[in-house]
Image 1 (cartoon, helix red, strand yellow):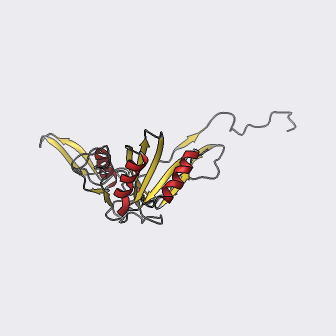
Image 2: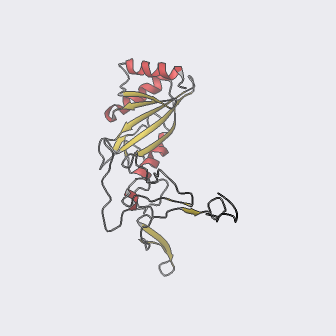
Image 3: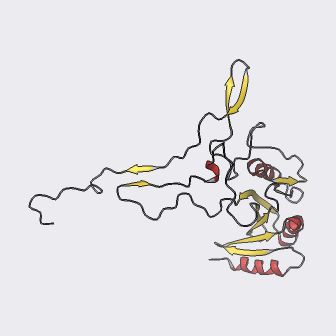
Length: 239
């Protein structure tokens, strides 16, 4: 059940001409506020100062290129086991000799979600902003509004490749300095691009192309108990 206070808050935000809100969506008991990229800083400042959302709990990137596509969808499962096929052309399973398939989602590919908390009102809100450019996703940094965004934006840059203009020190935070690509993008290969090993002759760690081929592991469980065995009818049994 949706909190009536969130319903009231969504109506107030939509009616507030000083808060540039594109849309308010109430789903699963949560309030999602959609903001245009060029109005991000204005909306964020207004939410902090006028509505008490003084704390940024988290910030995360989103890649919609495979949104709504489930490679494990199956309608029926046999009694004698469990086996499901996957889509061979899933973006993360492409061959290194072939380009990844194009995105299959209408609209911008990348977005950033800001999880906000109002301690004074005891309310939560999610602000979502879509990056206008799929090839070069970038948004203004909100570090000057919420200082906690510093490391969160570095994480989104590291894992999704989203640039935050105005960030004081935008560099990788989870992967190595020589890491290639952004591992949470949907088109990032599951086996990665390079592998590392220690070279005793050079006395250091070296990076090399991966030496294994991309493959899909399909889980399968075979049951051998009598519930699934075709037992012969007992002698004298009319069944």
